[in-house]
Length: 175
Image (tube, rainbow, N blue to C red; front, side):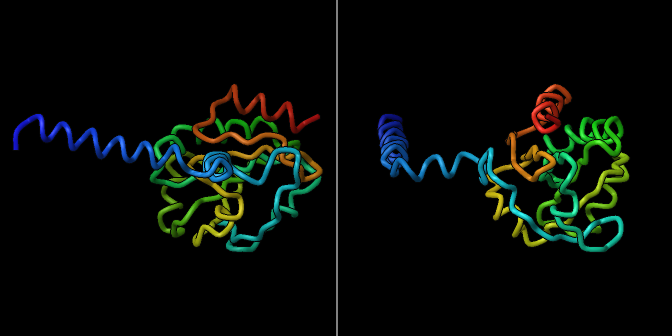
């Protein structure tokens, strides 16, 4: 095959993919891009196992305090990068705000060394079968939900979080 034939078929394949993607129903695309449940709606309750104690914990156990709920995994580079900011937030706010991490799809044996490496002391919940991640429609890691003391989601951030983004989200849930 000559170079022009290869180029033609490459353009044909890419063009077909683009046409298919742009012809998706309008209501299908947003659901695949935006994490749910929605801002200004109640955060769904769930029960998972705590890494540190092995006991069950529910999101409703934390009601009455603002919660920064972070979905992450040890293999995720942006998750690794944001851990120091999450830990600093946990230490800074103490009893006034709770930071909760939800590990997605991993065994405790993988999570422990990761937490030790970063000196993480905030509560970590294990979502081994990723059922909670599916309920929250996590489309990528990390994803962080800012939940006020009444259990209402006030902000969702998909992607790596830093101190500035944390501060903005905390202002919204501390009102």
